[in-house]
Length: 134
Figure 1 (cartoon, rainbow, N blue to C red):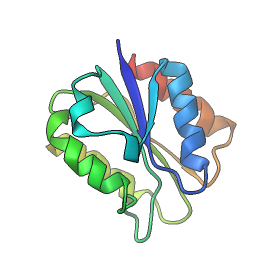
Figure 2: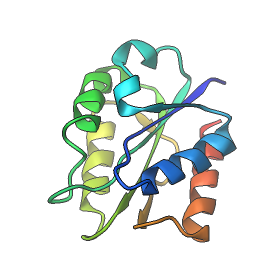
Figure 3: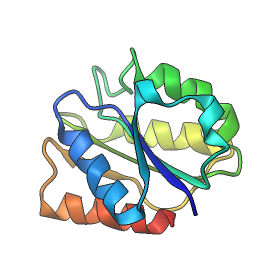
Figure 4: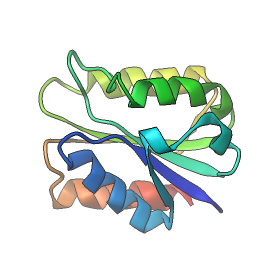
């Protein structure tokens, strides 16, 4: 099974999560600016990672445009979501999950969120997320 991890990180917290997911899944890793809709078909499963920004939303300059461009290709695709946040209650993740379900994506496990830098519990959850994809 070929797996990708695609993420955006401003502080390094979501990048650390992406590395934990990728290590458990044996995945190819891409930043949001390195991934496009043309690549979706190459992968059996994709984990997407993005922190909460602003008023609990996806990062809007790189990640959100990339994600919106790949979303039509996610119908039936195995995916998982993860990200970090600094405030709020995870609304951005609930909205993102709903958007993925509406696109027909198959969310294979519970999403992983952590506040600020991932601790051991969050890192273990990311590894479990990666394992669930393969």
